[in-house]
Image 1 (cartoon, rainbow, N blue to C red):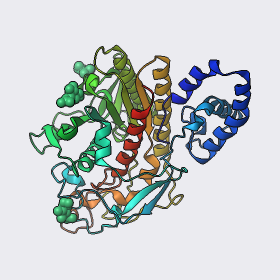
Image 2: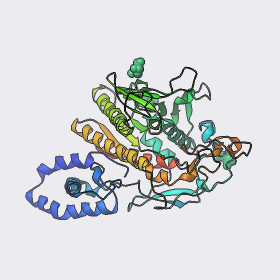
Image 3: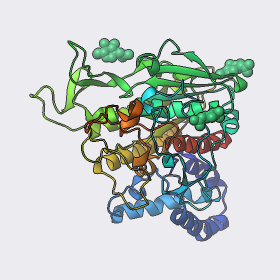
Length: 449
Ligand SMILES: *[C@@H]1O[C@H](CO)[C@@H](O)[C@H](O)[C@H]1NC(C)=O
Ligand SMILES: *[C@@H]1O[C@H](CO)[C@@H](O)[C@H](O)[C@H]1NC(C)=O
Ligand SMILES: *[C@@H]1O[C@H](CO)[C@@H](O)[C@H](O)[C@H]1NC(C)=O
C-alpha cells in the first residue's frame, strides 16, 4: 500500500478515553469486523510488516496475533479507508501520455528520451495502473491539482538516478500545463549539472528539485577516472549534508535509492569498518548490503524527523516519502540487443519477483513504518509514507530504454549493444509513480494539522 502514517494509532489514542463502555463494546463488535473487512479488501497497515504482502510464508502464530492486535488498534480509523496502490494490474489505455520526447525534451535526460532516440514501438505508452483495492482507482495525473496541493511549497527528490528519473517525469507532467523554469543546474547538459537541479512553477510559487545522493548518507562513489577508487565508501553515521542541510526549506521529500548498493563497497561507522560488499579489502569478511541499505534508509528518515523538530520558525509540517526499489530487467545478457526487449507489461502473477527486489522493498516498507512510529512518539510534524512501486515496476520490463538509451538503438546494428534496463523511458511507466505521489500528497494535505 502507499501509506505508513501513524494517523490510525494517534486518533485511536485520542478518542479512546472519551469512549463509554457501551461504545467500546460497539467498537469491538462492529468496528473490528469492519476493520477486518477493510483489511481483507483493500489495504494492510504497514506498521506491522508481518502482514505486508511481502511476508513470504503467510506469517507464524506470533505474527498473526500481532496482526489481530494491529487491527484492533486500527479499528477507529476504518471509517477513513486508505488505498493500497501497490497491488493491481496494468490495463490498456487509449489516452496516452501528457507529454512527449520533444515537448519536454530539454528536461529529460538524453538516455531516457526513447521517443527522440527512435524507439519504434509505442505500445508501452498506452497502459494505466489499475490498483486492486476497492474504490482505489488511480485518476490520471492532474498538473493543476498537484500544483495547487504544493502551492508555495518545495518538493525535493533525493537519491540516485531513479530519483532523478521520477523528478524529471514530474516536471514534464506539470510542465505539460504550467511553465517550468529551470533555476538551478541550467549550466549545461553534463552529468554533473544534472545532479542538482531545481525548477520553479511561478504560476503556483512551487518548487521541484532533485538532489544527487545515491546512498542518502555521506559517501564517496567509485570512480573510473585515473587514480579513482574502484569501490564505494559509505559513512553510515554521517548525513549527506548536500541535501540534509536544505531540509528546512523542503516540504515533501521523496527518497529513492538502491542500485548503487550492488557495487563493491566499504562501510564505515564512527571511523571503523562495519562491513563490506564484494570486499575490496580482503581482510574484512563479506557482509552483503541488505543491512547497510536498511541503515541508510533508517538514518535518512531519522535525520528528516530530527531536523524538523529542531528547526525553529518555518512551517515544519513535512511529508517524507520512501519510493521503494525499482527493479532492473536484464533478462539474459546485458549487452544483447534484446536484454529488455518486451513490448508489453507482465500480467499479474506472470513474473516472479527476484529475492533481492523483494527484500529491498520489504526493508523500505519496514523502515518507513518504523520512522512513522518514531515521528508519532516524538510528536513530530513529519508524516512518513512508503510509495510502493516495486511490484508495479517489476511488471514493466517493456518500459526501459534498452538499446534506445542511444540514438537509433545503439547504432551500427551489431549483435552487441549497451542497454539500459534500469531507468525508465520518459514518458513511460514512471509517470505512474507520480500519479500515486499525487494521491499521497493530497491525503497528507487533507490530514490532521
Ligand atoms: C509532442 O507534443 C507537442 C505538444 O503537445 C506536439 O505539438 C507534437 O506534435 C508532439 N510530438 C510528437 C512527436 O508526438
Ligand atoms: C512563495 O512561497 C514561499 C515559501 O516557499 C513563501 O515564503 C513566499 O512568501 C511565497 N511567495 C508568494 C508570492 O506567495
Ligand atoms: C563525508 O565523509 C568524508 C570522508 O570521511 C569527509 O571528508 C566529508 O567531510 C564528509 N562530508 C560530510 C558532508 O559529512
